[in-house]
Image (tube, rainbow, N blue to C red; front, side, top):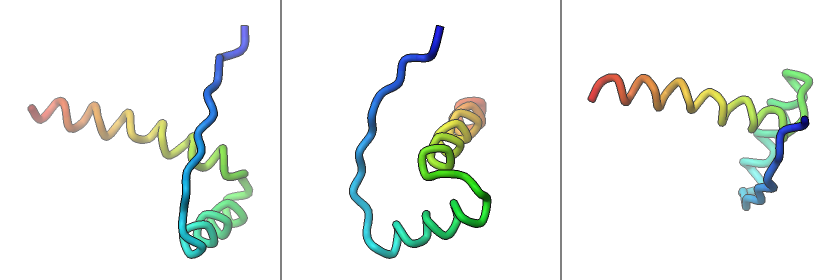
Length: 53
């Protein structure tokens, strides 16, 4: 069974969008994949921060 997905819409500046586009081109991934990978990386940061408490 496929994972259920949610839609996320954000507002960014032109500069932020250009930065995201440049990074996507550099790593050959689309915006959704890049942002998804970043969100997944937050799990590690949360775990690390929780272990310090």
